[in-house]
Image 1 (cartoon, one colour):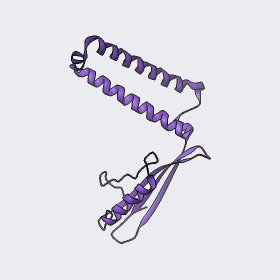
Image 2: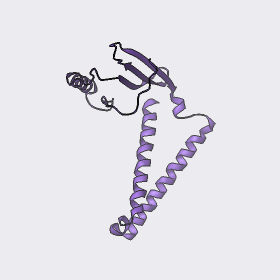
Image 3: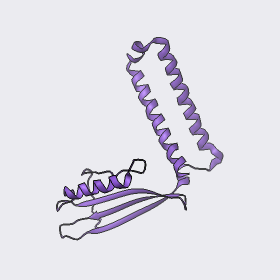
Image 4: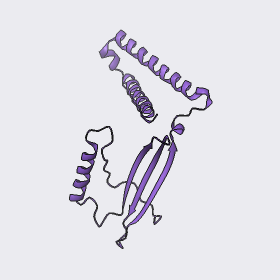
Length: 160
C-alpha cells in the first residue's frame, strides 16, 4: 500500500447479501452494469472491497478489506487486510451469564415500558396521545431498540 489516506466520500455500491434472492445472479448483473458504465475510470484513485465472512469450522468471523490503489502511473497497488474475530467476542460466554442477564433485564424493561405506553395510549385516546411530541420520540426509541435487538440476536443465532 502507498500509505496514502483517502478522504471520506466517493461512490458506494453494495452487492446483494445472502438473505436476498438470486444473490449470485444479482451480484454478477450489478458488476456487469458497473463495468459497462465505466464506473472505474482513469480518475479513480482507489477501489475498496469490503466483506464479512463466516468460517463455521473455526467459529469465527473475518473482516476482509481489499484495497486497490490506482496511481496516475498506471500501476495497481493491491493490499489485503484480514481481521479474524472469534464469535465469542461478539457475545461473551464469560462471567457466568452476567452480560446475558443484563441484556435480558434491559429487554424486559423496554417491553414493560412499551406495554405501559400502549396502556396509556388506550386510556387517553389516539388523538390526545399522538398529539404530544414525546410519544413520537418514545416510539421511535422503542422501534430502534427492537430492531437492534432482533438484528443482534438474529445474527448470533445464524452464526451459532
